Amino acid sequence: MIAGGHSGAGLRLASLLSARGDAVVALVPSDRHRADVRAHGARPVVLDSRGLVETLPGADAVVFTGGTALGPTERPAALAFADGVGALGIRRYVLLSTMAGEARADDSPERAEYLRTKAETEAEIACRDLDWTIVRAGRMTDDPGSGLVSLGGGVSEGEVPRADVAAVLAALVTGPWCVRRTVGLVGGSTPVDDAVRAPVD
Image (tube, rainbow, N blue to C red; front, side, top):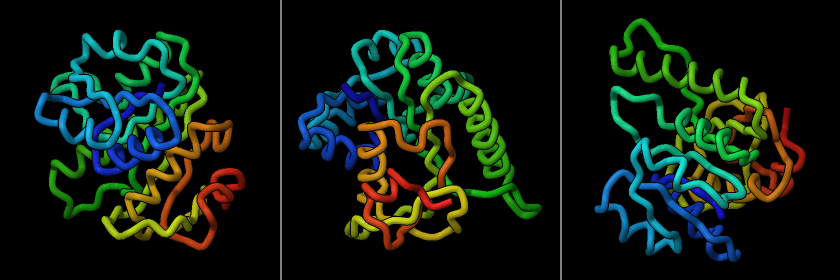
């Protein structure tokens, strides 16, 4: 069983995993997302912070794709997911993040806070005793996926179709590739399966 979110990349991931025979649970913040999740082959579960750990037993991996918030006064959702993974002994945790850099002087307070929280969240995940992978995607688009990407530690900023992001995430949860690594992801020239197994440094 794979537990994931309900973002655009998350829904595409649910479709890929369901098509290959995985039982997929998509965690959603409200009932209005249920129909979308079912249409992509996953079982929707409306989530709050109290129900997180109860939702995950039986999962082989957890993929956090964003789009599921636990509220402005609570722990960042990506960390709450990691808490649940650790508490239940699930080893595999994949976090979809972004390539957004450090805050600039002309950034809004909201963006500066977002970037600060993102950096702190990634740093805390990287300290966990989990088989974690942080995937920093470039600017995601709705272009058709090509199945060709650039993945690794030295990847420059660029664009990547959400379909290719989902394909990378689906590949990562099938094996021990990129474990305990932070990798960038943009469109490229390497087939997804090859890129995941031998990421470009």
